[in-house]
Structure formats: structure tokens, C-alpha cells
Figure 1 (cartoon, rainbow, N blue to C red):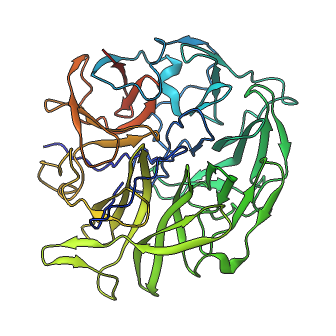
Figure 2 (tube, helix red, strand yellow; figure 1 turned 180 degrees about the horizontal axis):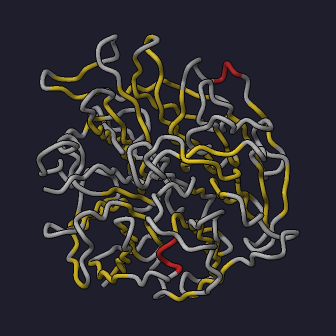
Length: 451
């Protein structure tokens, strides 16, 4: 029987909850979601208009990557409007050399669209004015571009253009490449700004030099009404805010609780939402969320409690669990997490406002895995991604399906046609006009039909 071990949320690289509140939903304008595995950082496309951000291209690359970043332009069908309702998905298997298959995140911004991919070294990038024709970034003029050997691990819109965060690629640190990469300290985390997505220049970054030496995941970047915020994946986190991506202000350590590890961060029309793990004692942690209007002052923690057969388990010295990522849509979010045990389990929560979270123990609409044997059981039977406008849950195989939602609670199943992805395809990337799904050797593109 098949074994589904991966949880895709957007980044990446997912779970949430609402406690019967009647608070008006918070429209999310610049999400981040995990892609490929429980441990990866979420990646999603950002809506437009308004500020947006995508996080690290954390979806697992194909087993065999090309020798270098592709330089070929490519074309796609003109994508529908960001808020257009999808009515069906038509799948197409991509050729091994198609540039589209390397894309791991897309940002829709006021100047068009920009995509970040994965290559044998560095992050290839493409830009488009309409979402149909995509031109690659040049890989030779390093005076006006992001250095081709760097990994683009964050991308957001700021007034006047874009800001990107980069790290030098390092070695794969856990033996399950590339689920948990580490990053080289040969170069510090770097920040780049661009007025158009084509011409880039370096600027002082939000993190201290050599701070990425022991990181096991990328930093987080999100855009909101007050500007952009960057947070390190460490405890305690280094958090910095900026209005333009050039000048950064580091928050005092007391701005967030000691021991907090931020696992994901999204921007909303009202500010920012962060999720992560807060220690209960030296050996146990619990999943929490925090909110901020301006990125400088935070409220919380808001608990993401774990559902059990006997009800809701609150933080204690018994079980230990944490939140790993966020998936956002217009009227709600889903946070995903992990129950730390052997065997472990995935956890999902839903929220309309970022404060009140309700466990989703059955991972609806996907449901839990149906396979038997080692590695099966308490994991969602498919992938979950979001872009601030919609969430998409999907899977391939004989029980292939695609569902969409604007809040993470009410789902619509879409008809699927064409070359159905394999049942092992679990790595998802949400595109402006569809979704990519990969089993790490083959990639399929599901084009969205809107009428």
C-alpha cells in the first residue's frame, strides 16, 4: 500500500480552529504556506492588489535536477483574475525539461508576477506582466541581479518595488535530502531590492552576519499594511521590521516570549499573524499563535489546542506539539502542526481571525491516509496550499480530487480531467491560474477552469 508522508500547506511547505466566535473574518492579503513536508516552511502566491510575500521555495525539488538554472522563457494560458471562482481542473503532465516544473513560489504584485524556482545551485527566477508569457532572469550580469548562486528564501512587495532575502546554499543536514536543508555561513543573509523584478541591488539585511550558520530552515518574510517583517527560525527569534526593505529595525528581545520558535508568518489586511511553538518546560512545547498590527507590538499567545478522544488537551507536561505552517484564504486560515511522538501525527487548526483556533482532527476535505503499514495513519491524504484568496486541497491517484475553499471550513470539490497525477504526488505549488503537483520525479500542471 502507498505511504503518504508529506503534508503540503503552502511550504511548504498545516492546521487550525475556531471556538464558536462571531468575529468578522480577517481577509488575508499576503500569505505564506508550506509545501512539501511537515518540516518545511510554507510557500504561496500572494494576491494583488496590496502588499504580498512568499516564503522560501521549500517544496522538495525533483530527484534529478538540471545542471544549472534554465534560461528559457515559457508560456502559459492567461490566468483568471485572482478572485475568480475555479470550476474545474485540467491536468497536464510536464516534460522533464519544462521550466514550469521548477517553480516553487509565485508572487503576484502591482508590477506583474515573479516566480522563484529551484535549480542545482541557486534559485532561477522568471517575471511576467500578465501571467501568460514568462521571461527568465539573466544569469550573467551580477551587477544588476540577485547572484545566481544564492537561494531566494523570501520575496515581498514594498512601496516602490520588491524586496528579497537570500542565503548561500549549504549541505543537507538530516540525511533525508532535501527535507531539512542547512545553509552555508560563507555569506551572511542578504537583502535585495528591485523596482521592477528585473534589476536588483543589495542592501543591509535584517539579520546579523553569519546568523544562518546553524539554521535548519529559512527565515520568514511577510508584508502587511505597516511594511514588511522578517523573523529568524531560531529561539529566541530575531525579528525586524522595515517600510522599504532597505532600512530595518530589530525588535527588542522582550517583544516576544522567551523560547518561542516562529514557524510561519503571514501578512493580513489588519497586520501580521505568526504561529510556532512555545516551550512548556525543557522537554515539552505547545502550538501557539501571535498577532500584530505593525510588526513591532504583538499580542498572544493564542493557544492551538490538541483534540483527543477525551476532548481538548491543553498545554501540560504530557504531550508536546507545535505549529509548523499557515495556509491563508480570503476568510480564514489553516495552521498545520505536528504531534511530537513515535509515531507522530499531523495536526490541523482553522481560524477566521488568527486568535480563536479550532482543531480539524480529520483533515477535511482530504481525510486521513487510508494506507497501512509503517508511516501510515495520522496524516492528511493529500496536499494543502493557499494564496490568500483561496485554499486548494488536492491529491492524485485512483481517488484523485481537487477542492477549493475561501475559509478552510466549507469546501467545493472540482471535476478533474486530463493526465491525472500519480498517487505519490504530494508536493504542491499554487499558481495564479492553477496548481503544480509533483512526486519528485514527475510534475503535473492543473490548469484552472473558471467557466
